[in-house]
Length: 252
Image (cartoon, rainbow, N blue to C red):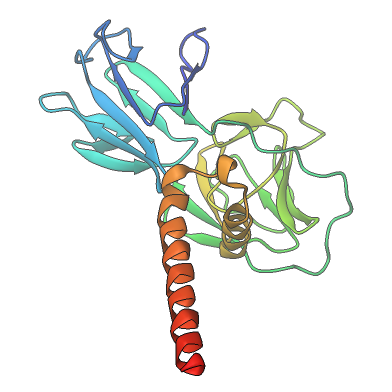
């Protein structure tokens, strides 16, 4: 889990722990400075299902991307948490890979959408065509560029984000990282101007899950493999028992 503190010069907090407490107390995992912060204000947790937030009892409301959370919420990388007067951004452990240096694809390998989760377009979904321009203002994504817009296009089977070379100072963030170029994946969160979008690409998610299934045991999460190993051994034992029974019947 990686946390950034955009209002300060503080370095990112990175941990392999599955649970992190944040508050004003020195005894917590992450101490926050500011007003309106309880000694143990929130607990962040991560498991194979994703990130979650729990607001501790008697602590003030926490805001996730300006939306109030009083008890619990599911999070995604790139979310901004307002805890009292402090701000914390949840980052992915590593920034997305840069967009590959390849020609755009004219034929789409599958369908993907950008789903607006905050801002004036919240609730709307936009098909990621061979190319799509994102705008800083309230204008919805479209096929035409405008001043300060950035481009999304398909490269090597992935939707990719490309910054505007005419206005290099205009940046967006992907999963909390300010980037001018990124190869996008299912679930990635894009913040640009007044908009927050999430990439919906189920085929990419299935491709990632399929690749994860063939990781060597030492690279997989223990809780992901424990159940599978038990099932495999049970099946092997059952097969051996059936084979032995058939052999005894045939021998008799």
